[in-house]
Amino acid sequence: MDWLLLPFEVSFVERALVAGILVSLVCALVGTWVVLRGMAFIGDAMSHGMLPGVAIASLAGGNLLIGAAVSAGVMALGVTALSRTRRLSQDTSIGLLFVGMLAAGVIIVSHSQSFAVDLTAFLFGDVLAVSSDDLIGLVIAFVIVAAVSLLGHRSFVALAFDLRKARTLGLRPGLANALLLTLVTLTIVASFRVVGTLLVFGLLIAPAAAATFWARRIPAIMLYAALLGILATVTGLVVSWHWGTAAGATIAAAAVLIFFVSALLSLLRQRFLKTTIDEQAQ
Image (cartoon, rainbow, N blue to C red; front, side):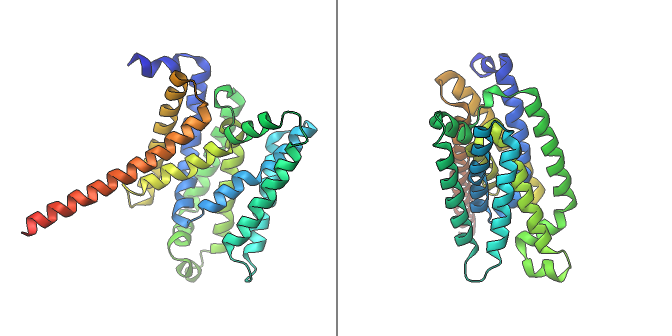
């Protein structure tokens, strides 16, 4: 067991673990709604749509979080506005904004002499350089996300499964959708500086999607998603320590691998149950 515990004897890896756990908790709450609502493409677009704001803030020597928040806000408003037009589907609108914002960000970053370094930091973050202030920010984000998820639970459920019923019950699905988009934005903005947009998106989608193979009730999906996210964090940090790989990318890869393992185990379980039922019927 020494190989498993050895990495966490180092202080910066301990902080990385705490950061990964907090991000996993936040992403489990928001990611469950994203998966159930079918908003994965929006999450991907939002995570990369922050690049122009981050790039401008970096070149101007400003606060990266403020730049990310402004850029994500512009992206969210753009998605909301274009989604209202009947001539374009929501996927088309999101795709246009996604490509446009990402291209603008790369163009801006390309003016920097540290282009490769800046873009790599944006995508993968630096989970091994997490500070106490970063952890405090993640705690605040978790509290806000948990409170909004709890208070808006009924509206989010109706929005995810029956939009017409949500309107009939007066649950204001438009407001619920805006709140959900705000939660996605908050999660990405609060986490990207620590773990990068790639890891945030990986932990936002993969654990929640994997959890749907094993649970049907939303609270259970959230719980399993959090546990799987934490498992991906621990696995990624341990592999990164022993193999010398990039910590953020390794955690993201572990999250995706856990999803495919869950899908395979679920398929095998279904086949086993089907075989058992057939044998009993005979």
